[in-house]
Image (cartoon, rainbow, N blue to C red; front, side):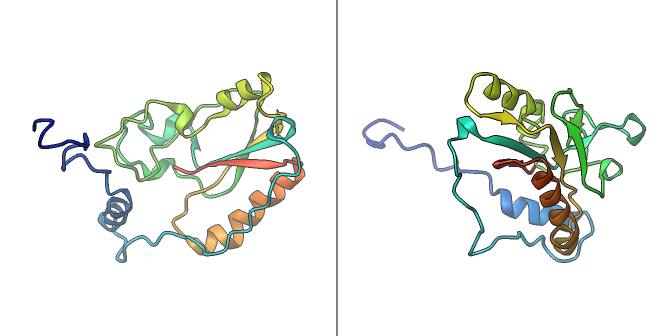
Length: 180
């Protein structure tokens, strides 16, 4: 296509975003769930403004990544979906330590991503650097793992209250939630 045919410099018609939501719905159906996955979203969200600058705030981290367990099969970058690697209860770990977390238990588009950047699901090293640079006040002493049970009821009635209790114990001002 010449510049005369495309004076605005638009991308080609086939260069469109991946229909992620539809792919996930279809993926869950292929896993054997009869109804398409229904995303939880709300009209009203109880967010609150920070009472201090981020550079003075204690930041918490919640991730849906699972601790690596070699007994549970292939969990490396690009691994096939691995239900054995799922976890079903909230867990916590020390932010001062390094952790090997993986995402083979998550339904994501393995055709278009290889999942080689651990920071995309567990940005603890980046948050440590931000704290050291004064961009955030400090990291909470713990991070927390949120199960991906595929059950809105379990998530809302069990996991969310447990996560909230833990971040309150950590006295955080804000939480970075990384849901893969």
